[in-house]
Length: 341
Image 1 (cartoon, rainbow, N blue to C red):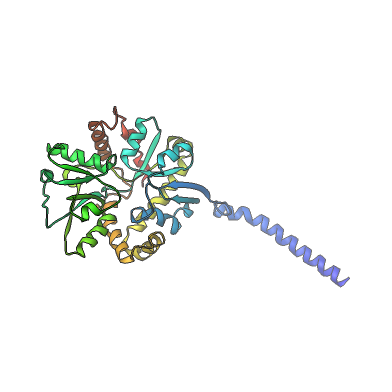
Image 2 (cartoon, rainbow, N blue to C red):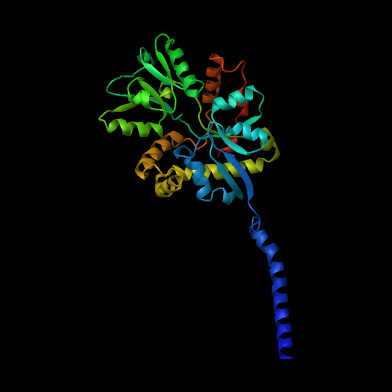
C-alpha cells in the first residue's frame, strides 16, 4: 500500500509538471519565436577553393552568424568544375559566388540571376613582375614584354582591355599561355605573370625574395579597368519566392565578412582559415588576410558588400568590345544593392 500511495503521489507530481511544461512552451515561443525550431538548410557554392579569399564565408559559418539567422548553411568549395550559377539553375544550391563575367555570360544565355552583394571592391587579379628587371609606370610600358594570360580566363579579358586602351596590339607584346606551373615565370621565360594578389602573389613574392629578388604588382584598376570579381548571387526564383530568406542569408554572410576583416578578430579568423589551409604557415595567412582586408573594404566609408554599378557596366562593355557576348545584357538589371546593409 505504501508503494502504491507513493506511486500515485509521484504520478500526480509528474502530471502537474507535464501540464506546467505544456503551458510554458507558448510563453517561450512568444519570447523567442525561433526557439525549438530547426535551422533551415541552405547550400552555398563558392567560386573557388576555401582560402583567405573566402575568409568571410568561413567565419560566417564558424562564428555562428548564419546560425543566428536560423540557417544551417553548407559552405561548399568551388573549382573549375563547380559552377555556382549552374548549381543555382539546377537547384543544387540556393546561393553562390560568381564574378561579373560569369553573371554576364549566364545572362546572355538566358539565365535569371540576381546579384545581392559584391564582396571584392578591388579585383585581386593582378600581374606580378620583377621590379629590378622591369619598370611599369604605364600600360604602354608593356610593349615588348612577355605577358602571361590564361586563355579563356578573365585575366585574358582584362589584359586585352588594357592593351586596347593603350593602343597596343598582339604584335607589340608576346602573350604566353598560363597553366598551374609557375616555372615559366620563375625561369624568366615570361616577364609578368597573373596572380591573385592576396594569395599567389604573396607566395611568389616570398619565393623570389628568398633569391634576393624584389617584386611589384601591375594593377589594372590603377589604369581604370575595374573588372568585378567575387559577388554573391541567387536565382530570380528564390529571390521572388522568399525575399526574407535572402535577407537573412545575406545579413549572416556580411556579418561574417565584417568580423573577418576587423583586425581585432585576427586570431579567431586565422584559426578558422587554418583549418582549411593546413600547409600554409599562420604568419603567411596573416599577411594574406591583411591584403584581403584592403580589397574587401578599401574605403571605410563604403559598406562591406557594396555593389559598384559603374564597374559592372564597364565589365559588360569590355566583354561586348571583345565579342565575348553578342549583344548587351543590361547586367545592371540583375543588381540588388538594397539587400547589402
